[in-house]
Amino acid sequence: MYVCVCRAVTDRQIIAAAERGASRLADLRKELGVPGDCGRCGLCANELLRKVAEGRRFLEAPLAACP
Image (cartoon, rainbow, N blue to C red; front, side, top):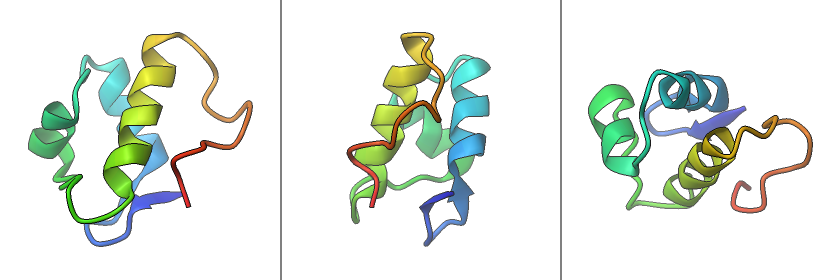
């Protein structure tokens, strides 16, 4: 699923970045170009980072912050 349509960034890219060590939205901005301040994508990206950090499967339930 696309998290940031403007930058064509998917949930899988964000999860992969988190698994490589990204832990903050600033890390995603550097690596993937997720702006985070122009819409809901920042909320969704943060939720994905949180779920990866907690070790949960990201497809177990819909992400609340994602449209």
